[in-house]
Length: 92
Length: 452
Image 1 (cartoon, rainbow over the protein chains, first blue to last red):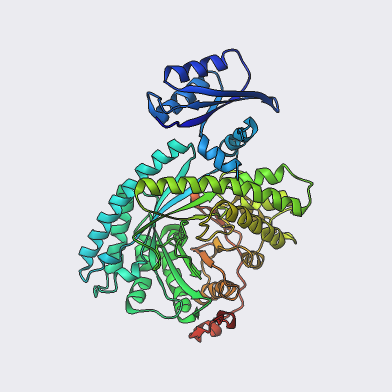
Image 2: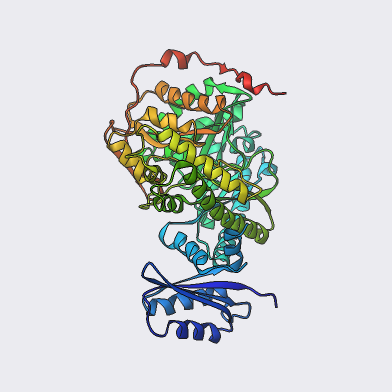
């Protein structure tokens, strides 16, 4: 199956269990994590996970909703960006 | 090259904090083949076709927004100019019946606005064009999602002063026929109207278009404002560079949305309109960009130059990002829809004369501004003629969307709510140009039109 990759972006206050919870959710939904980056920027915790979601059981819309709810439970903002869009915007 | 965390986060921030979205996906639909002498049959055929396309557009736009992770705010349809559709209809009420059928189609499909209820009369008008013009007050006052336009001038045809003089009276009727003159907010008078503009009120599907085309209007005043505010001290050469780079990014996203949506709908991808379109949301303001550049208020000396810099930088970034930039592709400066513009008018920093000067470097013209309700028809016509002359002489699109606010005087304001915002009533020069307007005729095309 052709890859469909997304960036999962997590923004908010650093706390225990962020990577564990997000990655567990991705795993349980059949997504494969290919890269993780994290950094504190201007006092805000920012993490991106590059994940292949072509095998996602609930589809991208369902996965986005689950991730947003998971983030909200920890007081975090979670966004999901299509990798192709990010590449088009940031590479000539 | 790997995408860095900062780059991904920059995109998140545009959407989360700076109102970046796709403002409009507008599907142009040809209706020429449905023209028929029986106006009821014409109206029903149009309603059916647009309900079908509208439903598909709304559904697919929702899916593309999910797949690409970019909000799409408005789903719209533009149609063949309605005057062409009623050419074979002798029935005087044909235009109003058609207008109501178009509005019904938009409502049933969940389409925000449907544009194209208009005519191209830059040189002269057919009988059907005149019937459509006269129907505008009733058509726009009895519908909620329909938008109208007239193209009254072009660089190659000149300016149709007979039609402009008549429009002054029609605008008065439109204002009187609807609460708060709302019908006037859904109508624009153009010079050099583009045939692929995705933005309302002036969208229509022109003569050179195919059966369908998907056009996209991006929106990024908030994104550009944020980046300008982050660079308070750089010189203007660098500021242009910074804006150009930012507009490149948002245009690329718009182009991706447009191409994907067109593919799913099975129609041609038309253009990306790179216009910066403000909303009434705090910060999503073109006026705030000008203030961030260093003006105390919009209207201060330097405003026209600042706007010229802004739109040039927008075009540079947009043209690099997309091979099909079209539509209006300028900077919108609607008074009622931009909080910084409202502030500038209310503080006295911005008057109508300066606003007109700004439109000489900004494609869209005098937009969403109110004048006193007792403004005579000839003064409205004169205002429109002046603005369209700027477009004709400069080989560019200009438009006028004016609200003669019933019962209001300069200093009052008229509140439309929602996207249309609140318009402070501006003072209009009260010296008369009536004799000039009532002469009628056609201003010849400028010599610069003779290029062959």
